[in-house]
Image (cartoon, rainbow, N blue to C red; front, side):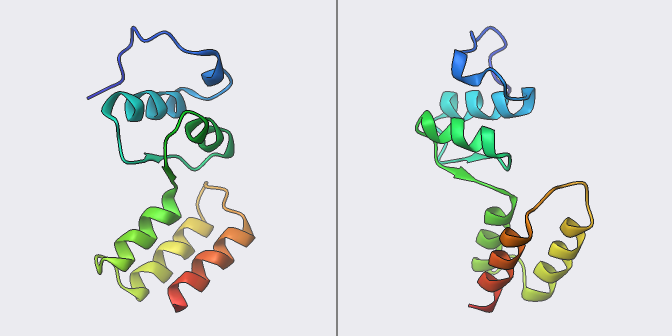
Length: 102
């Protein structure tokens, strides 16, 4: 299901890229449990309209907690993410690694 292309964009969505707008609109239309957004601006807007937000690292931790990924998988993934086009702050990477130790 894709976001309704006839939906009029509210002013608070202006300034977000198309993908973030689509995620927020779709999550609202579906009454989703949460929206998956990594960018700060998109997360801020999603929260402002009442959505819970998870990012890539949050989803990975959920999969780890449910036993879908093991610690070795997670370590490989984090190295891959650190070397990818994604910009993840060192502080967030540190937090993520600390979660794996628990």
